[in-house]
Length: 164
Image (spheres, helix red, strand yellow):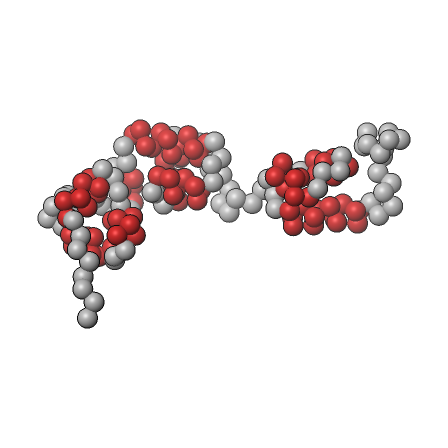
């Protein structure tokens, strides 16, 4: 029968009181969240799980950093990882800060004219993808669609191959 992992209750309590979540402590220690909860019970005042009460316990300085990251278009996954919060908490903090919500799913419309212009300057699809924020395969798809729309290459040019 495997032996139970010995957990330092005082260290767990200090980390929890500093803002770590039960689930993050469980992941760090390779045990279940129930094991962490049992070690913390009686040592600390447990925070409410989820909901508005849970997010209001986040210190204002951390809330400001989360709001700033969200407003700066840092990816939701990166914000959640960096600040150890869930997506709904991030959105709630952004709402409270008056920051407009971003579309869920992160799908963005690519500027086909910009892609065509970069392609006409002989940028490879991989470089265009980095510049416009798409994947190389999506850029290739857009370029094929643009070629299908203009199969003879009859787009308006200034005689040197550049669009007007």
